[in-house]
Image 1 (cartoon, rainbow, N blue to C red):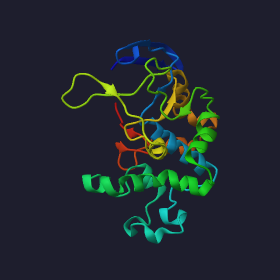
Image 2 (cartoon, rainbow, N blue to C red):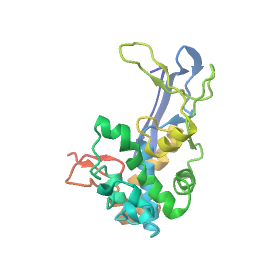
Image 3 (cartoon, rainbow, N blue to C red):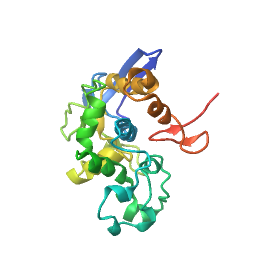
Length: 244
């Protein structure tokens, strides 16, 4: 890693924060604590939080099924006709991530969770995230999309990858607008929602004490912390572990 940024949060306060290294490999542009960073798969959690906000507003139900949102469902795979929003968000919709299925169907079906919310509200995922996540939580540094570009002296950290059998990282390639739109909601390993770590704590705080802030209803705040099945495992947007 060309650079590393870290923040410690405890007792509802930031206890410490620091950054070291560089924004881009081999170029002396220092990484700062004020830099926005792409926060990875946590934007899946934001998508689930958005769903919770819509449920609280009676615009969506956890039991809403795919076929209810798409008049042309006859063109879809009938095996998934009755899959619910909750099952998709909990990774319990019966979609198997084998190589063949992933190459042909995985992105199509997993993306339904965002498409269902778009269909019901008449808004794109991006505008919904601004309305229900960034604005009410005052995440002022947030943006959707890669924060980096291909400039030699970047204004923000650049994504890097380590090729197989290599010891030197290379820049992550820029993606097409269409793929970016899909990846915003999925985030796969990419994470194209970005903000400063300081602003990121506002989202964490909303979930930690969400039942007392009014941001989420008490029932929804509790639901988003529970595993879908059993006492451990996939919850809605997060993996839940019950530790001593």
